[in-house]
Length: 362
Image (cartoon, rainbow, N blue to C red):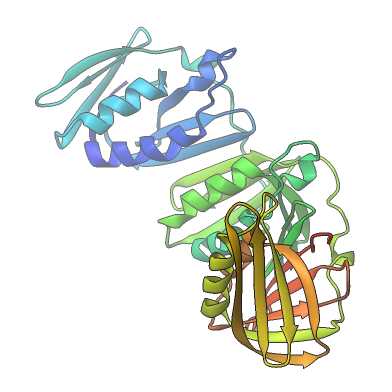
């Protein structure tokens, strides 16, 4: 392989794929990035066996070829080089990189040892703006379970049917559901692993085009511009989460989102080890209290419009803040659904996002 490439383009491509590179020391080949000429361009690939990524960049090719190169040293070198053009040459599993002021040789691996990233040949199930997918995923990130004890909860449930895309996550203590409009060719229900969700958010952050989603044989692919992300899906069945979302409320409070957020943060300074605060809704205000035997206590009021009966419950203040940061608009609605039942949070003018928090026991 011999080619000439723009340093900034190569740096961007390496930065994109290296996040997927595995730290698995028992399989050294996973610590590499695969470089391969393909249809007049250079393809960079990385995989950790659960998730794979490919990206293509324009280059001037003099000789075709391929090599697997250690990601860390390759990335560090390319990020340091300041010259505009870089020449890349391979010979006997050695990659030589030269520029106006630099030249280095890096020992690589035979590309035949690099794992194959599955290629999904089926037609796209759905296509949507990358920004829409990213924003939806961001809203459900915090509710994913951290523990892998129940793998189906350590990710995001994605259901595409009719003209809706629904994304859900829960760690048992809270639940997030986002609904987005889509034009789907078929119905699909899958569970995306946590790492795939995080990588999707990162990839979609600086992309303005549409993401095509393909699915086949327990593999899902997200294709946008010259980037392809291929992931396995989580085995198992997602719990019937709809049963947890109350369809009726006992009391409802309408509150300014920014005022509620600021006062919750203040109360958070005085919580105990379980991050508990007490919320009392009565008359025309919401009262927030917190007490810590080592720090002191606080009581603060937020104006609210209350419908129906007063209510009181204890909640983890961090869970409230996680929900509020994803609420669009100026006002938020809190719905009390009964003692021991979840508190429902919604934006006042957007029905596409629902956030539930289980109360703490008194």
